[in-house]
Image 1 (cartoon, helix red, strand yellow):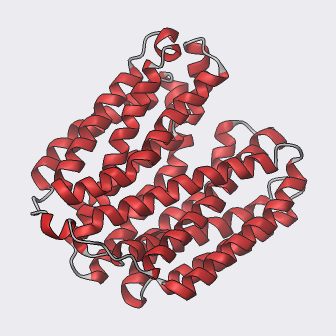
Image 2 (image 1 turned 90 degrees about the horizontal axis):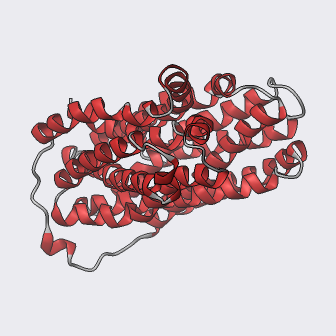
Length: 380
């Protein structure tokens, strides 16, 4: 039950990355705001999340991961209420709604490394921990397809405020359950003050994690733009058409965890990187029409499905258990920050010509996946 609760935490964090996107047109109309205001509703969350992951990961090692998780749930819930209750455009223009989204990012930054660190505390055996990390990663991945679909349904039926307020009943149930179930683990203050030795395995795992999100999130962006702007499909249809990408990503998390538990992280990372490279190179076949996109989505979804749990486990396992929060914070910071850079680069490449830009990105993405493969074999 506790593992399920921790999975709900990562699900909420990842869900609020994507669920708000489909609500932006309604927010713009409902609050009479500008494109800049829409962008800051997204950026207020993402920037805060990426900036504080490392800080809160290390904080959990000092004060206890239970406190960090409980604080994260409480802050995330209160900020969700603030976002959903914003009554007018003045709150957005004067940055109060952005502040509410930023505070929501603070809660997310507490939850993301905190939930992973609690898993490390719970599962001392490396095999059991790898399987649990696989389930945790699968729950986070499940939020990616859920965001556009759930957001579309909520906005259509209840309005844009519902994409924020939907978090409240989940937090209302999850917070008291977490208070009761998350164990109190004594923090190792003395060890936390000793000098930390960073090895090549830790560096390599985080480099691969960053490359994965650079290509992965960048590809998700350009696929979404291709479907909605180039093929003129509506948001809900485009969300359905992205299922071949997101479904394997969610399903394969536990599978990758079990393979990692039995054989170590190098095997599933190798499989994932080869599949990801294949998917990126399939962008060369995209011209006009949805059929050519499916191999790209499958390659990316299968590749990241095998890779995510393995690379997270490789990073966490390469540091001592009392540094689990720091290891999780570094790994998630690499994934979020480099992933945001990938979104910017991929978006810029396709901004002038979609099809020729996709062909350029085929070679860029394929090359980066293979670079990750070399880093895996040299370090992990």
